[in-house]
Length: 414
Image 1 (cartoon, rainbow, N blue to C red):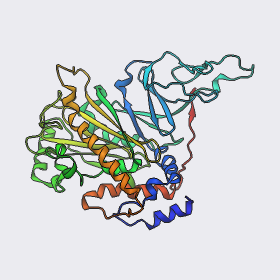
Image 2 (image 1 turned 120 degrees about the horizontal axis):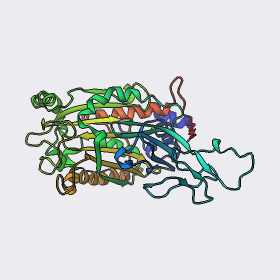
Image 3 (image 1 turned 90 degrees about the vertical axis):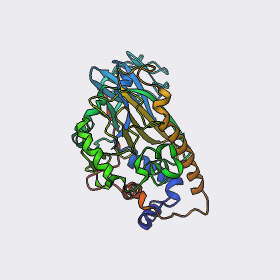
Image 4 (image 1 turned 30 degrees about the horizontal axis):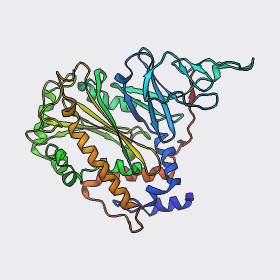
């Protein structure tokens, strides 16, 4: 689709209405999504407990890109592009592993775990190994959570760190571990998956398991008396009462969104579980259950729910024009033992059953949008957050702001 036509679609978008069909099924718009959203935003890739020892690594894949997230030195995590500098072969295919050296299995080029080239046989006398390290992208760790950014000059991560460190500190996520992680492939454009997550208009009809414990299915829950009661107990339980939100068009810098808000669960429910009762030990420094839960967000496509006994992190990535992935991570205290302190099936039950339901919801939505009879409908007042995302997305398609660039230049490991 010509750029002029795309800009006309953006200009003609009505406020608080769903997007035009082309935003979900046009390949040129999809390529713009990759360059302007995913290659310039901070993206969650995993937790430091997944690479506990020096030499441990895992892959972060989306669309055609692959990055090696590696514990390259004590206290240091690097993000190395999984593309050999010789003729472009992938270094690793497996999802995770351990290595003292990174060796390309095509022609044997070997790299140190910091990405620098160590050996390349039969090269010319003027070959300079120091200039042929693996390409490296920006990487930051916040409370044990690892984020990357492909841009040559990404938005500073410090604003996120300053805003959320104290809010998240009671959970001690830097001392947590991954109890379970699962990818849910979805046959839809990535935006439909994000849109679905950003509204609870569908919660009551689609998620009875979630709705019976979570108050967001009721629009006024955050201004209720019960909300005030939970906030009063939060501090005594060691939890932050702070509410911060700098997301999408209100973000300080592009792709460095952040938000944190605590709100009540329904009475009789103190965590996200089948019966509303604890499924793991209290997290970090939290002293007791206050009857609430927390939403937090970092970047435009990573969202999390923090209960007193576990944290669940959602990340959405594209895998093609009409394919996407929802990656879900469950974090608990590092010293919790399965069978003694928690039961895995009970821990993951709520968000596993909910995400399986969302897969079907989103794919059904995608099928309807492909119809020649589809036209954008009006959004509900319960979809204001969704409109915040869509309004920002439309603004992204207009082009970079003053002093910004969509160009991605990735540094070379040295």
